[in-house]
Image (cartoon, rainbow, N blue to C red; front, side, top):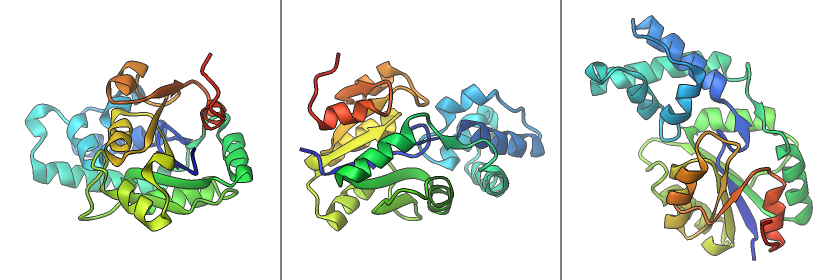
Length: 221
């Protein structure tokens, strides 16, 4: 049934929250605004760095020009700290190895800046072959808009329904549904099971190995 697996990056393949939070908190303090606990960033991130910046600011400070300035400064900091605490989730290396052994096509689609997305995958996940690693680009709609996902479909010539889409946020589930892919919510990530189900997840999984049961068409216990 499935020929490809499309992965989100943050909260799905990699734990990135501490480094993301550190960068934005340092940017906030630089401009005289309060920082936030790391856990708060579970709900700040997932769409774009500018959305993250907007959510991290008090409502009175959300001027669009300043939001862009804060986001840009945060990315300057992130460029130096993204690797401090970021790592693959437990079970991800084994899953990728098995999927590659089975000959499935592996793809990554993230709303993270494309440059960061590519360098992180290259340095943290170098053992595995991803046919496409795609992050946010100027003038291309971000998830949950399905444009980038459908571009991947076209480039790889694999039907949307033959993609298993693994993600951890409503943004991912909505993208999968809109693109005609099979949406699977991973509950080890940054959002709740309830959010994932309400956003269209057909299956929720607790560990990366559970992906193999879906591919093998084994019923969930």
